[in-house]
Image (cartoon, rainbow, N blue to C red; front, side, top):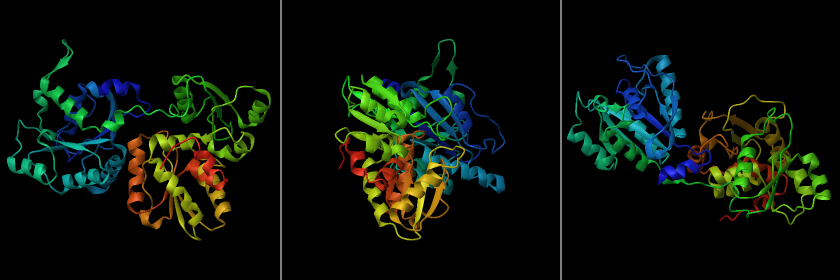
Length: 419
């Protein structure tokens, strides 16, 4: 069952975007789906402003994140800002729900469908407010024939007919059918339970984690990739040893436990490579997450493009999280420095954070570098990669790029099997 798989998932909660014109009843639809007042309901068009996220338990789907967007037909200066914010949602989601009413289907909805199709994101159509106007057959035929929707993916909806019985903790059959449809529409891949290192180690193996504590390290805690790798290693019955790079040499000189795998912060690659015996597999947290979250083979292939960079080439660096930058910021200082030293070229860099878009078209860049993506779902990373791949722009990953410029790329890939 999907629900059982979902409970085991590792930070891969599916995101569902709700789209439609102003005042078609998106908020009412979400409130019914959640069985609680999540969104503001108003007769005034344009009540929803910025996209609003709500995490809920949705039947057999388990936990999901619903994203309520502003009406994509909003106008005026503020309206354009709302629509721009709503369009960012396309790259965040695993599935779309397009809400219509009164048989209104035109360029606004077609734009939504086009954006979802471009990212291979599945969707369903909800024709809302059927107490006022039912869906006509011409529109239904267009959706089925032109957009290849299955009959079951087009739902007649009236929030007034969806009644939640609090005494019996149940909803009518129609609501359950809707949740079942959402469950079937969500891509099966997001319910998989990918392991980070479980296929690289065996029960009882020693996994050595090298975690520098520098200016970029958060005070009083470890960063998310380190925490997740520790948990995954423990779940697979491994013995986990965590230390700073400054104690690494001491460990190998004084400790008898030989690691089956060494995982380091990518920024310490050169130092760690020099200390760890060559017969012990070595990789980085960032490279592990490139495999977990993205298209690993495309990252590997794209890394070699670093050697082909020319003077004045533009490089797009994609961060997945927003944070305050520091003097030795990896994206803005260290990566450019190491690539410049390796290529001996004069290169231009642009850093894009979270779901922001590049300043120019993708074809103007010679290389894209994606961070590990610990804060993103796999679909969000894949969506980020698609525009570059479609424009034949090579893509690499923070850890792979660093390993390549330090001359240890092949060693960093030694633990993995790839094409």
